[in-house]
Length: 366
Image 1 (cartoon, helix red, strand yellow):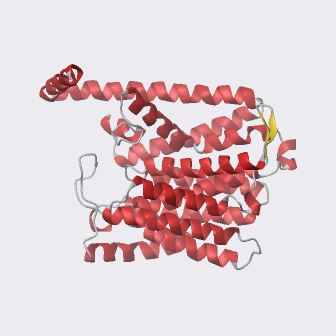
Image 2 (cartoon, one colour):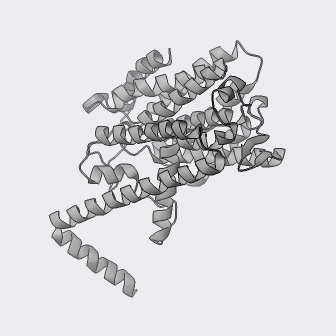
Image 3 (cartoon, rainbow, N blue to C red):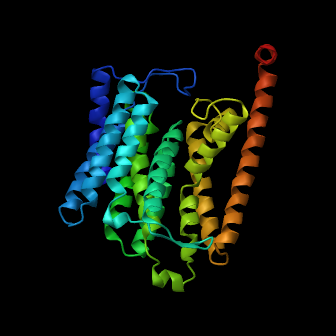
């Protein structure tokens, strides 16, 4: 249903965007050469609100209503940014409001880490703070990977389908449906995001903030679930739940941490935009948008599979070291790719390279 509705609404959004000339202009960081409507999030929001409302009519828990309110705050903030560019402060405040509406949900009470690194029960206030941190961090991390065609969509599908399998295996049908709804919306969106010409559309901040919030919501549910005994008997280790979430969310979390460290190393603020994201590295090495998106989506899936294979034999301490090893290996690989692309660029554009060196010398002398 989510797939069909998104497929139906998106052309309507495209038509209105073009009729009103609401296009995203090309800038220095853009990897596109023509103006594209950035309002895919309008269809996302309409479909999510419709389906969550239908599901809520069958439930007694207020969680769905809280979710809709949070989605509305984020959608309005993102839509404003897509239309006229809003401040980072406004978006951050909207994220805090959205988080506030779901962290108190009875279905999302975080009171235990199930033995992660020896930690079991945690104070309720610490649980609330941790949930706010998770929501805000994941919304922004997902927003940051929305830099090329298909990447946010493909990674979002990998994450939401993984969650759908987990919730199905543990007997949480409502969250299975929400996960499948998220995957369905993104699957339909990819058809338009990968298109050329007049059918092409971006999800925009309205879309990435909404989808980042959905992923954060599903992630919270994963973290607060009580150990499911049939899975425990099959070898699942409850203390690895937090690390499993890290594996599922590997790409947005890793890419965000990576660019923040690079910016700090270069003496810039963590919030200053640049071309150091993983997708930029792949583009600079000659990959197309589609190939780069599938490579990174495949990397995220590979980390999930690797985690599942190792988690049967390792407790949280060993799994933490294993995940750290994955982070280090991927970081080294992408740093090598970044330097390779830079060397190729210097060979192909020697004049620009000479000017760049002069600029660096001038900056060093100031």
